[in-house]
Image 1 (cartoon, rainbow, N blue to C red):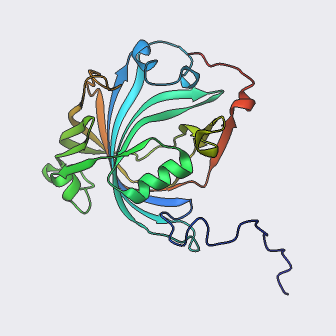
Image 2: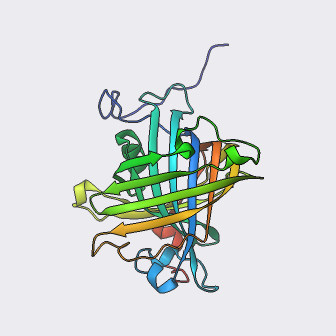
Length: 276
């Protein structure tokens, strides 16, 4: 039978906004390797770098903070989505947060070496991505696949570093041990500002709740090592200590980002404020 579905009529016709898209529409499939250093941050310090409306219920100090490095291959999940695919590296500093009854992680500082990913992340989600130069070294990043069984060869080392004009974040892995598990379900709480009329109209504020879909959780490795933040005076991360309380590596994960996203507007909060 013929398709009787009415075509969508748009006021502005394609190509829009230009014939050469910078990025493919979400959702994206992301796969690769990730290193995470977990630490803690005092409540009073956290309030200086995160909106109090995104802080979790105050059940005690300190809060969880993490520094994460990714080496990612990306591709659109939809075949009809036009634009490039490829690879990027990323570093993220995130803090545990919440909004309403939803708990998750708020990515406050993000760096990448990909102009495509930077544009996609900023324009689609409002992530605060900035450019940085990356240096990944050692078997941790050079191996096509990490060893799956405990052995001398499985004791993998490597360094990860991202340098921007403001400073450097780094993680050094001294050794790894295969463990049970992989990437875990997460909610990325994403504060976003929508600028109207090039700033001539009042901005809108909203929060996106991005829930990655796990296609393959990958393989988890417990790691030993150190983490370091070094930023210019006056930067929000300047002087922040980052003792690595624990570290882990996940190899071979595969997730979908952008298929499950909820929006919370300022109107929906009804003027309510969080526990912060």
